[in-house]
Length: 177
Image (tube, rainbow, N blue to C red):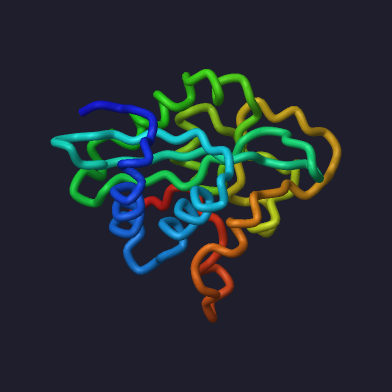
C-alpha cells in the first residue's frame, strides 16, 4: 500500500471509490468532482493498493466571511472491502502530518468517537451551518472565541441533486459503518 497525492489520472478512481464507500449517496463523489471541475484548491491524498485507489481524503478551505480561516476535512472514505483494517486511520494520520495541513485549524463534521482519536475536539465555535448545536462538529488548532458561521466552498451546497430528506445532502465527515 502506498499513500500519494491524488493525481489527475486517479480522479475517476477516487470518484468511484467515494460512490462505493457511500453507497446510496452521490453526494461525496459529486462534491469531489465539482470541486475539481471548478478548480478549487484542495489537499488530497489516496492509498493505492495493486494499482487501485482504496482510500481517499481531502481538505478544502474553511472561511470566515471571505477570509480563509482553516481547512475542512471532507470527504474521507475507504473502499468497502478494505474498511475496518486501519487504512482510513493511517491515511488520516499521514494527512495530519503534511505541510499544508499540519499547522492550520482543521474542522470536520463527523463521528466524535472516531475523530477524537486523532486530536479533534468538539467545538462550539465557530458555528457549523450543517450541524444543529455543533453536536458532530470537531476541530484541531481552533482558537475561535467569537461567534460566526463557518463558510464552506459553494460546492458543498450544490453537490448531488436535492433530496426530500434534509440530511441527505449535507456535508459529512467519515460515516462510521
